[in-house]
Length: 395
Length: 202
Ligand SMILES: Cc1cc2nc3c(=O)[nH]c(=O)nc-3n(C[C@H](O)[C@H](O)[C@H](O)COP(=O)(O)O)c2cc1C
Ligand SMILES: Cc1cc2nc3c(=O)[nH]c(=O)nc-3n(C[C@H](O)[C@H](O)[C@H](O)COP(=O)(O)O)c2cc1C
Image (cartoon, rainbow over the protein chains, first blue to last red):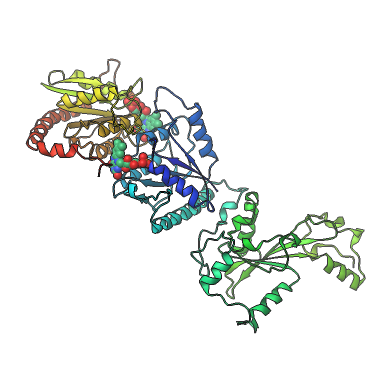
């Protein structure tokens, strides 16, 4: 997710710049923040239109392309600094890049009240019809007594403040998704925003306090939950196995299995092969990641669509053929909804199989042949055929 | 006879707020001597570490200090005051702080129907900040909506009711200046305390 961070101060040294740089660095696994300085933007003048100047056009482009904007404002005389206000005037005069854009306000200032009054003014300004930004409500992040807040590495000293900031950023990601849904025209193409692919929320089983992106997420999470392993028995419905037996059993399944929970976090795969030997590559270090980190951004919309089908109960399984394995394999990815006894969506079981050997075996056993000798003769579907049943079989 | 200055709250070449101040200047010649001050040559504030006021800021500060009272006329940009007026106030608060205890009247004109009511509210809050600490005349909002249509070709307000309202406000302001300046003289030490306030010095 691309975010533009605007430093609300044109001073050579600015705590608000430090704050945005810290956000960009600390939360880079959640969001991609580009920090923009306003120093080069001239003072607004209604009778001297400079909208087409390079610095203003640069802002226009960056904001237009971004998914959201974070503005870090100091407080000058109980209000927003003139330098920031001037930028907003340019961006509401002849051009309106902030129109409909999700915006989050943060602020740092000397007073213990930490920019509360300037944040309030900024909200009112951003709400004016020429600006018309969509400002995230609540979640005021105020950094008071800012001259005492950072250590020498320009990190926030207080871990609780960092934690609160993280929760604000996560809420902002969700807020952007909601705003995008509101803004999108009907019959929208990109549905990526319908799912929280960054897993910023949590569910009952979410293991809190561990970096989802860490390579050793499994080890850390096991420690945190005191997870059992080895020859410890686990009671199942219906049976009892040791953890080792369970592992071997799952690894003997004729498919690659992957579990992603309803919070869109990748929790498990039956690891028996190296990544390069798998039909769908998985690496041990990926376990724990939010789904957004398991897929390229261009696939987000399809991933979200599939999850929505399962979550909303429109389908119980969505299948797709992945034709990149050559003619002697027919690899199918099946996204199977995992539900509890009451039908509540718990997540996805993605199982990946080469179904060709099974079809061959079936044909051999029954002495049947596929019409036209080729799968796509009737359905025209070499890439679309996705289940055994849609392959036409001669009776 | 009082000595006032009127600050045009914009850097725009044509301004209905400038027209309003010019009208006030002309209409009340028998009551006050009003000098109109422009802010368009004041550079953008950027918190220089040397805390030195540019010459244009210093000139304005001196005029404020010498005046009995200040009238600020503000447009409304995005429900607030223009950046250029704000920049001027930042300079004043950051350098010699001449507005401390100065009697101030706010007027405003804007193209919209609400005629700068929101920007005037912001301006009050700003002038109330510790490094500005002006004495703002209370409950005295004077605003002109649809300001492009409000003046005739001689720069006179066309609405007679508005003129009467303005006269009332202006008379109030003269009284307010009187009272404020008495009060301020009594509390002289208070003023020095205010002038020593600095956000970053604490
Ligand atoms: C003109 C001026 C006015 C200020 N007014 C306030 C204020 O009203 N409240 C406040 O908390 N700090 C105020 N400060 C102090 C700022 O909080 C401080 O300069 C802070 O470092 C600004 O953020 P920055 O470092 O990102 O520029 C003011 C500073 C200046 C220069
Ligand atoms: C960037 C910008 C934002 C504006 N926002 C508002 C507004 O929020 N409300 C309003 O009544 N007029 C708004 N206006 C129109 C002003 O009222 C108008 O430009 C006029 O200039 C005001 O004063 P002046 O005649 O002294 O320049 C805006 C104008 C600009 C250039």
